[in-house]
Length: 93
Image (cartoon, rainbow, N blue to C red; front, side, top):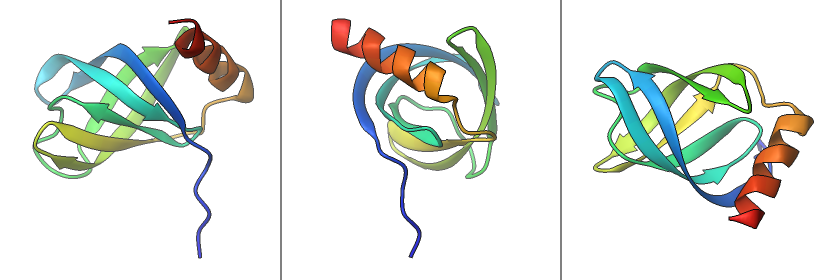
């Protein structure tokens, strides 16, 4: 059995470059390995996306998309520093 990384409820806008071109989605939850979002990003499972988080370029793939909600997996896990900063930002909002 695979154990999932802890997830944190979130609500912030994210500008993403996808096969559709630039898109804006809302992050619903976040972990070191990926995130869940609201918005339309993918035409097919495994479409590639890029965006910036905490001044870092992040590459990911959309692993699922149903209507206007989906999930993506980061190519590399986010650092503890980046996660802490994002959680702090979300808690202040």
